[in-house]
Image 1: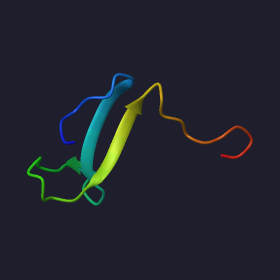
Image 2: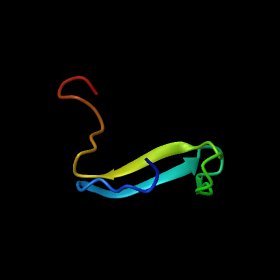
Image 3: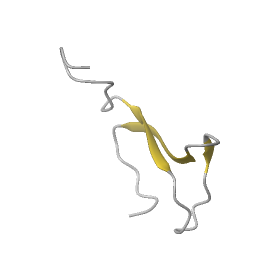
Image 4: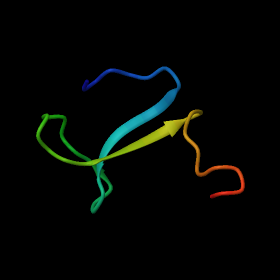
Length: 48
């Protein structure tokens, strides 16, 4: 569902991976989800 926040996220944006700029929230434009928060990790222990 578009526009529903998750409690543990600080930031969630849909970004154009080529320009690294946010895409319009029109329900049609494709982009890459970028998360920031305390539930996001870079890798697994001893398996980055």
